Image (cartoon, rainbow, N blue to C red; front, side, top):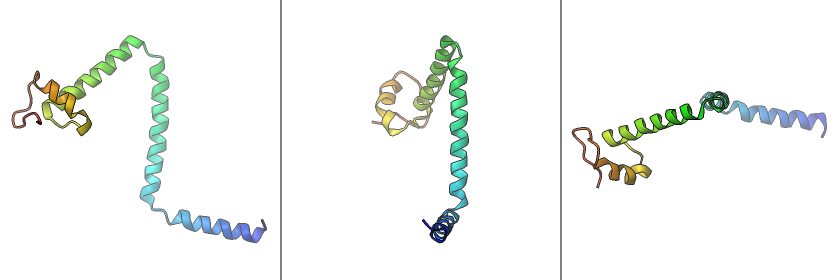
Length: 99
């Protein structure tokens, strides 16, 4: 590839990249930061006591499940399970279980 063709290809690439909006680049930067932080968190959690980690995960899922049952704002894929459990738990006043 000659220097002239390389310069033209490089310029075309620069034009294509500069046409991408800043919103896209901001999302890419946030994705990279979240990925790095997730990797760091996973490495820290690997050193935790398995019992404490299990208790924390149980507590998290219990809170999410209780909120879904009380508020009835669960995602559609979780509705069958929440409908079955909603019979045994109180719900927030105005809404009733989905039928």
